[in-house]
Length: 501
Image (cartoon, rainbow, N blue to C red; front, side):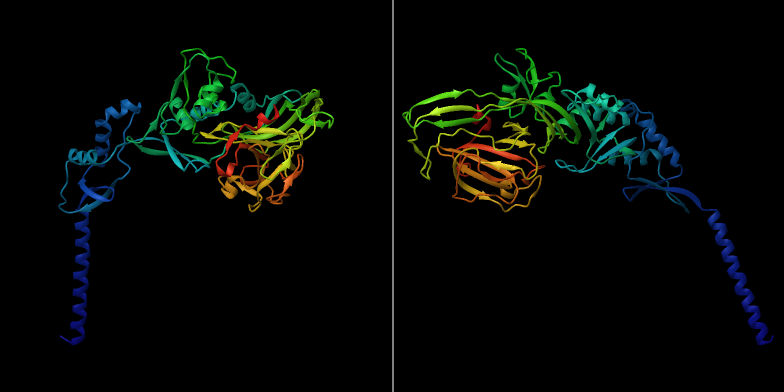
């Protein structure tokens, strides 16, 4: 045979052998067994021939889970994977053995919903689990009704609010501030799954690890006294005890009230327009009669409080009003008349700077009209050591409440405040005045352009600065504090309203 023919014959044989191998390989694949490899959290725990049988066994065995959660089906753990495979002589496990491995190491799941709540100002991001979305929606509604009257809320939802032309309140907007995402999910039966909207509402209001604190009403107790004794303000008490409509509601001896401090996990906010009567305290003024002895003092003109009909708008978040209430209109119903006292000649030297007692009374530190947005009271478990005054607006004048000497003037904080913000100890740009007789006043959150300096003597009504929003502040207002003793060295805060009684 020629060489060329030998080569051709060899190539034909090689091709035939290759085709035989390929055909044989296809035949072997066709004859391979189909099995399912079972993985748990990425690790193989066995192989089975019928995946549906495993799913059915899980569903059948977990009747207790079905009864507990009132569901029709129970599902494998979220970490279970079943992968189809073809192989020869693969060792196949008993379905019951695979089931037991799963039960011993992982939690079964049921179909429900994950509610993911974005991070808020006072809480981290968190997730809740429910089987029915209406449980969460009803809980949020109950949460909202802790902070607003149900009739007002329903009128807002139905668009049935009346036009504000008399004393009352309307709502411009209402919302939950956090971003909330709801998605269907297989939930581990060992996760906390809420089935009761009332339980969930309480945890949204008080926190997920709260412990209820109660108090038994005794003779002489009032809502204000119980609140103050337990580091609550009256609004927080009313939120925790919705059966009482106001701080003046009557208590019954022996009743049990909730004194748990609220710790809201979501933020319900509304913008309100309100028309209300506001009473302004009269100021006390002194006139001197040098012909009288220094011990002489006689009221020569009685004071009359002013009364105005004020329309304003403001924002409330979880029952706490923001500090920057804006006054839109004021109608004076009764003009304020200052009280005048005639005194004898000056004679007393007081204060470490040796200035004379002018005998002048205290004056309000802001212009009119104004609004008190936060009283001297407990707030979120901490004592608010002054009163927050808003209304005159950004840049309005702040006045010295009486004669004295400036002992501290701090103006190094930016004019845009935030919460939390420790600039100026949280007061932002602030001034402290020593009025003698161990009485000090503090003026906080002002703009940077403070008008006084440390060591400067000021008179009642002098401008010390301008209303701002510096330090730990959420809006333009004045924090006005009164202390017995220098507040920078152990003074005791007092209610500023006591100066004007």
